[in-house]
Length: 244
Image 1 (cartoon, rainbow, N blue to C red):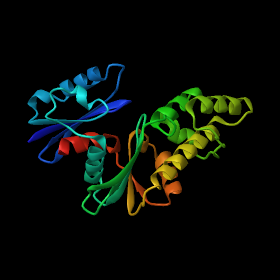
Image 2 (tube, helix red, strand yellow):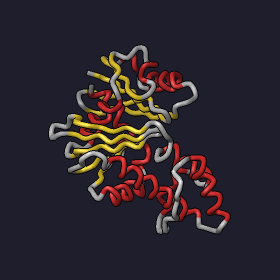
Image 3 (cartoon, helix red, strand yellow):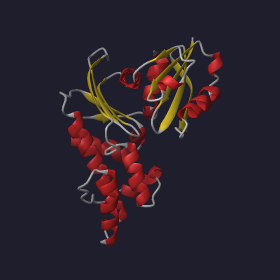
Image 4 (cartoon, helix red, strand yellow):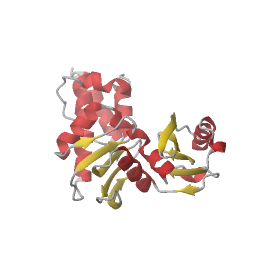
């Protein structure tokens, strides 16, 4: 059986093809101002017409009219994360414009979750905008923050944080210290958010920021729990959709 999972997120759209329980293809594209267009490009590239089943998740899931099923991102992220790492009991996902913490039982079923989608603070979009202020590509954040000392960032409001960064730069604070300070602020906020629930076991870190080691290590520091990830962690939602 050939199944396709589509995760239409606020920042990126992901697609995964699975056949007989194995990933055979995957693709990620930026979610444009026209999310339906990004979905169309993904489905065309992954040859959706050959699929036995298509399942959609994410903010734009209702835009995929040809989907056989549309499932909430909580269910799909949990299922995809467990497929990538069966030993986990918690999923922390930092997306483009939201943050999710999901508790799992020993069978990998969702028992509780929290979701923050009311504010951009602590999301991928926040760090992307702040790194743009520092004139450093987000993809270089691991090297840029390596060996630095985190500057104190007091505001997590996107507007005020940008003003604070400009002020720190004017005072001669090193940009690398500022970037690490932002990472600590995000991970500290995320850990506080996640620990509103009773966490236990290993944590799986998914979402776009999970591809950067500095975020994984800093989140582990604030959670005081083992934090795992995977090279396909950003595709967890799409994987879960394909598995459905």
